[in-house]
Length: 390
Ligand SMILES: C[S@@+](CC[C@H](N)C(=O)[O-])C[C@H]1O[C@@H](n2cnc3c(N)ncnc32)[C@H](O)[C@@H]1O
Image 1 (cartoon, rainbow, N blue to C red):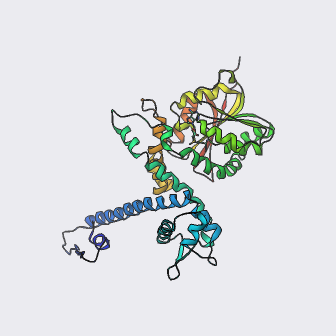
Image 2 (cartoon, rainbow, N blue to C red):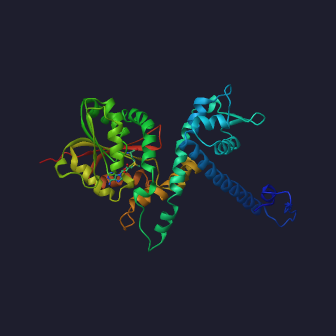
Image 3 (spheres, rainbow, N blue to C red):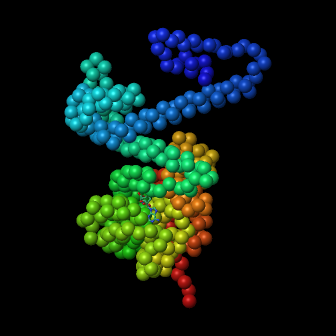
């Protein structure tokens, strides 16, 4: 801890914190030592900011889970300030906790407060930004599996962690997909070959569809096409069926991407896999099933996280926090759900576009095209099942 950190530390009335000045004028301290010291200080600050950010994320997660952000958006503004009691009553919650939560958000700079009259409000200019607080909900879910993942590091421990240990992870992903699906469809409609097939009328399968929001958004845009969404999670498919009852060109099925029904050979014009392949226990097997079920000349549309497969390169391109966040999500979720078989072959979500392309080639796909999706952190791969010449 540096001398400045010590003087910033906690204090109470009967404890005197002495700040010691370690600054030296000794000429033997080289410029190199000064540079190293500066880097060290900066790293200490960066770590402190990250750890505090983790704590703030937990408060964001609670606020989102309890609907407190929605309440602030709906009930408050610069001209309509509310006490913690009024907000707690509107939410049916206990005032003391709501107040402490509000104070944490005021300290963070998201919520405003008049300390004289104890009223709180969310400025209009911050209303859109609070939508992103939904992502904070993943933090406690991932923290909840820390022990499970730690036991996978043990050579004699389990190789992976079952999906159901992640609680509402899939439900939350589905909630997010419900508002990102329309813009993803817009992006996919710019992939010429896909748009042409879908507009003409195609039979399509989406594997790993979760709550079915992408399939449903495609089905309502491309009414000449027919869609089946498939997922291994019964809960996901029940949710998908309940959420999308009104589309006649859409159905959902529980099933495993690695063993699709025997009578599905040569059945689909298009198969879609969005953010799925890297989290399968046997991705190559699923890809060979995709190939089997596609019609000759059929199109496989695969969406995977944007990554160079190199943490250094990803950090340079996407920034330190964003890329580290993706690698940590891979460590805590994508890798352990894929490592159900003890063979260390799971990819993790940051496997990179080059490996992905090579795998598609190895599995027998041709005409592979890649395009970065501009509105998201994903890359789209389109490829074809070759027509066999007799
Ligand atoms: C990260 S989610 C992506 C969901 C959705 N495609 C999206 O983009 O929002 C991965 C999905 O794959 C499903 N899944 C995992 N293994 C599967 C398998 N072997 N067969 C089919 N679905 C699987 C999971 O249940 C989950 O819904």
